[in-house]
Length: 156
Image (cartoon, rainbow, N blue to C red; front, side, top):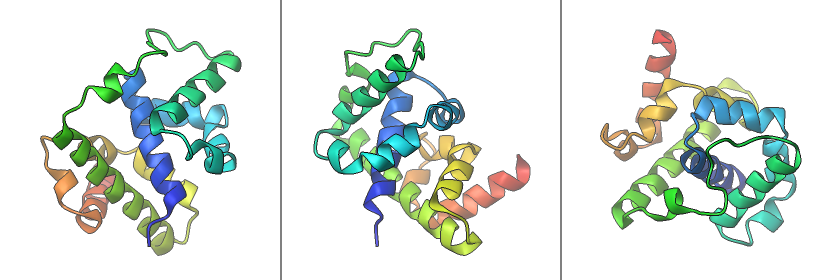
């Protein structure tokens, strides 16, 4: 069964990385340092009522209020997020679903929290490969992605 909160976090995280052109590891560090993960979890009911783009903008504004300088960011435009073809959005959606399932499976298998599983995967090379649509990894499903993650982790 899909965990809607994790799926929402995965989408918002990906869109934030794309919008700000920041690596997943750097974004995860930023989210942890400034409590963005907790903010998303605590305000999920409110954030999920509006569009994902609005949620990303809320997070950008929250970070600005906390003194984070988002250099080179066009914070009021969503060009990086909205100028995607339908097939690319479908690929991103599939990758988000795979990542969500992989996080949930890892948490169950390793008996760790969803947050620990999320952080392990997001900080890996497997995360970047999943969203590099040329690799085709987004088409393989969560089981193969977990296998790929484990292979990458051994080599990292």
